[in-house]
Length: 204
Image (tube, rainbow, N blue to C red; front, side, top):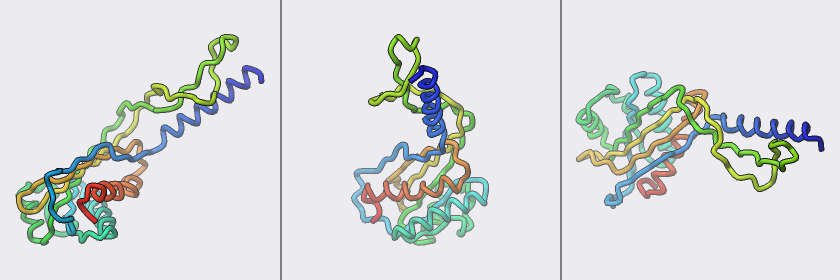
């Protein structure tokens, strides 16, 4: 096969890898739980999104509440209690007590634009010297350092606090890269939090 055709094929392959790397992704980047907590499963919660935009707050809280209800947890969205988004820990605790829940799920969002991130694409393998240092696709390629690009990164931070002492027993953080919308993130995020809570034996 002519070198020019090989190079063209490689260019197409590399472009495909780069486009795949540019696609929106949401992943859980870290999570923690208090191993000293040996209490019963949490069966009811109040979810509170500490977000100034009321419409966004309602959408986040209601989506988490719906997904957790489907998972068997009785839920209350904090916006239905009249609690302001910037309420103090004491006020949140009081509102949770009034609803009769065992715990409060606090959620916060941070968005960073034009953040430099690494694109983990497959680095093409160098061909023999006769190809003048060109590149060609080969089986058994290894992942190289990749490329860098600017992206919009959205982080969700979640923490679960017991009502009565405000003891935190779980926390997690997610990262979404170049999400097209909040709805796109919320399609996956509540399920990821629920899966982690279950794996740590905090809900059924």
